[in-house]
Length: 399
Image (cartoon, rainbow, N blue to C red; front, side):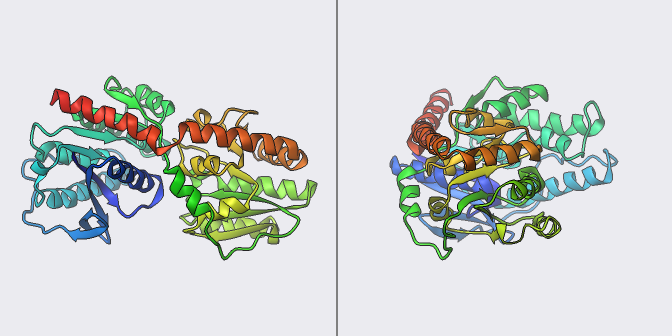
């Protein structure tokens, strides 16, 4: 079959959404299907096909009947700015869609609610629309303080999100935790199916064996934390924990790989805590699998998270895991069996769990074996694709 994977966001991959798209496309191609990817690159939309980036030729302008999201005077100025940005993204994506022949696809697979809304409006009625939701927009707006329950802003966002969810033929959710978030927000979940994210394990293993320019320190255990540097990922909590650990124990170093909005604040915190050479900021890296091979302990200190690829990669690599007890992470890590959990934001407990692994090499080795076995059983790309293709066949039968 021919499948269109579409998003308003950037492609090639940036963050978990992009990684998901990359693995989804790879899995479909391995099964013999044709895949086009519609995404944004440098503020212009392209179709990526067989590793070629084809620019969209914009033929039309305007809403063509697609209603606006903006409601003047709705909520705070910050909320209004976010809604206007949503409107702008919609119009840009709409322009790209109108220059694309959607009849050529048997399944369209959106990756966000805005692209799904536009595609539903323009696609042929017999072409089914599937969406993978990577987060509940209503809940995220609440988390970041843009809306409060029962306010006009909440009703606007939740009504829009609910409407999009109802219009899709099937909704894929990466975690049971996110499914419950939708229920709490009053958004319909009857057509949702939980399919955990998967990784191309053979390809990942091959990347682990590649050379890296970073040398491992001798006689020291290496702790690693990978992912975007943003507040929700909790690296500030990790630095506090490492400052406490440094007072109690030597023989370790921590690598923090990634970049993002909080990078400057984290480096200032690092300086204030006098962590020195004990913590090294690596910036954005393209060799994460090879770096994981060099390390001993993987820590994910998220304050909020869904079903993170960074954790999945560490599990496939067979690292001993220390993770916050939050979100979909609790579906990936079983405390004392495939890792050690701690309350999100609790730097004292994070410090204790890191010290526990450093003090007990036998525990570290056992957890590494258990998490590697679990990861290879449940996190393979084949495991994910079997379920995704089941969804495609279901919607094709009913379309």
